[in-house]
Image (cartoon, rainbow, N blue to C red; front, side, top):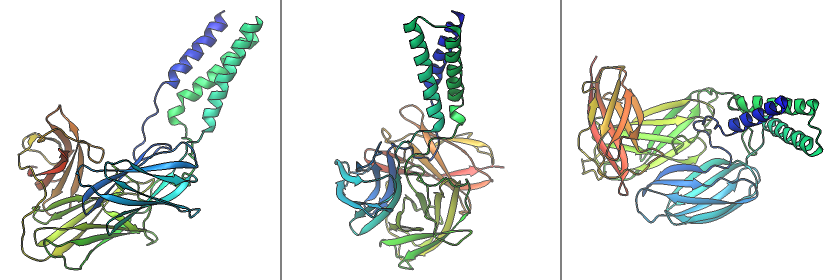
Length: 410
């Protein structure tokens, strides 16, 4: 009886372990999960949602979401990068989904057209796969059940049978305890596993026309090259719902844009902009390569013409800083009161961009909701001086930007 009770205890412990969750992995799209990719078209930010699938062939649904209410129609085409098959459709923001066809797992490209703007979004259709260690644990649990049931039904629950059941349960428990540290199952369609860490990226900004004018549309293009080979960098990871986060500011900080450029070719990102003020502009692109860390690529360009009114929605109410006089290298908490209920944007309640006055340092922090009427950001600024800051949040179908200054002491 003692042996039987021991086997039962092991099975109970194993069941408890099975209920424990595995630690989350940042910036990894799991097999079967939805992929959200935000792109900035002329009408504003649009988040494309590509639904995950559990098997192939299968219908693949693509929908479009936006915080603004513009009725923008998007043409979409799913292109297989291995078989060459194509599937087309169209979708309007917030109105249903386009149903495309994924014939196999592996690499695809989603072609998205909005008017005369085109984005080519590379992604992989991933189908869940089974890990060998999961088969071991499942087999061990099955063996435990078979041995105990057969023993009870035959009335021969002998010591050897109980011992074998106990050993199998012990194997299953050990495997499940080690589950968070064992390699994840490689899903069908995944890219070959590469070593973590890749060469740095070199970036070059350019504008078309070469000398943009205030109040007129121009295209800002970023070309990315591998620091080791010079080849186009085309392995950007989707982080915080975008392959790249681009911050464009005038030198004096009076003009601010946070956009998500379109991939127009391998290693080429572009976005259509319009600014109201002439002078020098700074561009900072946050990118992250697959199986590697994040990187900031910066550049500058000039704009000509006469100053014009800025139509970007801004909130000039001042935030609260704790401590009131931040010190270099020490945490500071910045709290703001939104105008209304906050809508998630880029997967977060709010975003805070902080730039040193000279443009050398750029920080990007994410906000947490502090009750129903406040957003709170915490970060450290590296050196004494004057910092230009912009807090952003979405409410009432619009994106609000709140500019302010942070003076950092020694």
